[in-house]
Picture 1: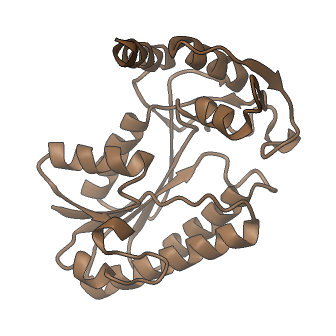
Picture 2 (picture 1 turned 30 degrees about the vertical axis):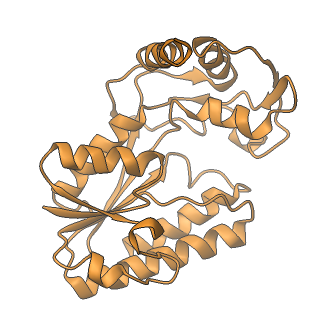
Length: 255
């Protein structure tokens, strides 16, 4: 099959492209680096010619809700219009577990608009909501680091490996459209601050971590609001297994 991957140069997109190609499918990266501008639609018609499905793993750093909604509205509208014209039979969206339960986070506002447009379009759609990635704690440290300390919310999450997310997105794209929403999570719940501490240790780093609800993730994300429901699919990779790869990479980098 020929499958377009919107955001194919990003964290999840790269893994998704690799998973498609390992399975013998033709992955078409939909990104500016390949001549496709999702915000204007430029290059989409040619890129999607003959495509069977599209996986949307786009992302935006927009910190304002209006900007996030505008970005996802534009990219999704252009994708869906081009898919309809090209006869694409399946649109798969990567979203976030809990996106419908939390207000006040710009990115979540944009993702809700993305889901709404996808599920109301003529092109059959499947929405895969995943929990936070194993990499998320380290990413948060990078966002909030100030000298030798970083501030993190003590979120309760059930994180998942990016590689597992990619495999499920590929499986969804190759299958029949669900015209609905499913959830994907890792096998165990974790505390985000502890995740960050263990990730830094595996990488041979040391940093003072300060738990706080002041920031992007406030008290509205406390408790079990970010955890998956009872019907969620559970991915196989554990956080401990992922940490072992981080330690190995750190050792190789220092060798």
